Length: 348
Image 1 (cartoon, rainbow, N blue to C red):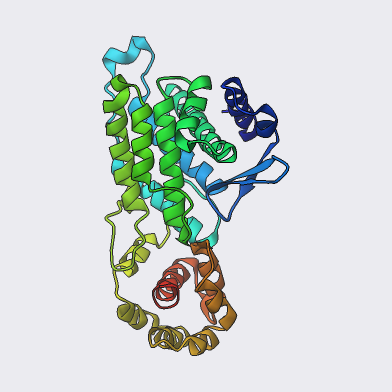
Image 2 (image 1 turned 90 degrees about the vertical axis):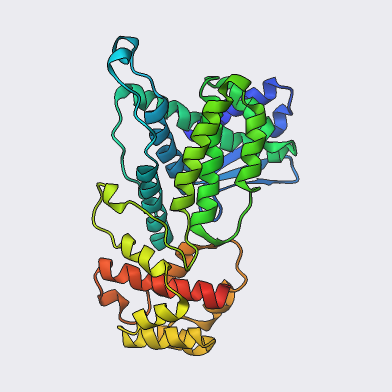
């Protein structure tokens, strides 16, 4: 996989070859962003800035590697001896949720490796490349004020492997959807994933549509499990499938299933935290801010801040009295329960 700038340049040249404004396209700057998954900003002089978050790049890599296991074919000599592995939805869901949990807690990106054979690595690399091309092309299309996903697909098709371009576009759309829904409490900048996949499906050649539909269903099922952070629900995540350092994320999923009142009971194990939680549940925002030693202005800002990253809340809540003395495995569920109350009583 080339660098992001090399990939951007290949997309720009494809769009220029298709007749789009050369000067306008070549003035586009590519940067890493963290306030939104992917965005473009156009300026009066005709230039633009595209930002793509590290979280989107990480999730693209995860999807690409898991998808490569299902679609990569070994060298012809070995094909008769080996069966293609079925798509492992449970493993993908757990891997995605692990990445999302870390990002929601700290704002940092941490992924878990999926070992691949060389021929699978090659396919994963191509899928990730096509996917990043699609994300960049989509943002360039915004700059050109064109039909975004259709234009993006055609641009990637002009420079990519035709057989993998549909799946690369699928990964791109799913990755952006994943980042928006899992890493932000508030703030969505792209159309619903269902409508975007419908646009892509119309562009996919007829003979590739059944494969596209099958893999789209697999990615959607795993993604829906991984990004469900709605209070009162508890997704069935196979945490035991991961070869990962011990994290209390399964406990966080248990807390997610609780009502606000139940969370307050849980938090009363820590007196100052529990008292602040009760105040928050009762609507006494200033008392909660005082007890948790968090400026009331922060609570007020969270009521209207858009976009609002989940990590913004959690990093601030970690400064509450007594939490610094807890081990990580004990602190994470406490902060998650506090954040759930804030999201329920302050953000709404």
